[in-house]
Length: 315
Image (cartoon, rainbow, N blue to C red):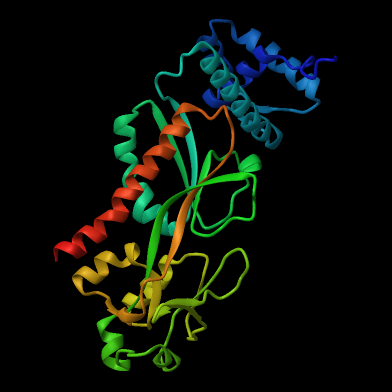
């Protein structure tokens, strides 16, 4: 069988990655214990084989070309996978180390994920975490993410989903708005209220408000003069300013409700929730650091989920 990697020069690739990250052939040579000329020759052979320029060099500095940046991202991931494979085979994965890349929506990212990261790194100080806080759905293969946190069911059946929390939905408004417009007493009253709208980033569809009435789950289309796209947190900013009513997750407005910045309404129609899950590509060779991070998220999310129930039973 022909070797698919027959033309790949791993030594040259390692030197290329070092030079790209250190922005210096001299520094890469010192790290590898060879001469700068040897690094230059190795990268020259790589450029000749690929028929592209990987670096733009000048007397003052060097930088990656666009092709070099794309190649570096792929090579770094490939080298990391080789290291993980060797660790697994030789049993040297006893200690978690390396980089985890996570994508999280602004809601869960700001309110839950980011505050948990210092505790995770205290447990595993050799692990670094890169977080993309965005409502954009990522492509695991092209964007090179280890995992993503999402609030809705994903169409990609190739991903594994582990539940994190069931996020209760709440309707609230600022005291200034409620003094002006009055508190809604029934779901029908929402027709005469300013209801802040949010559009789903993926579909552009307006999010329906969800309620439970005498055991029946309901979805209601509301209306209002304020529409937010992409970032749910902006609906809360509008609500705090007295723009109207908002429905979103309780964990996002817990502090606002506690200090009176927002006031909950329509409590007897509550009880609906949306699940947050952590998604990742199914693999038998998951790096230890990623597996530990997922377990940590599940553990901490369950603790956070229980906290409101504990407070409600003791109040």
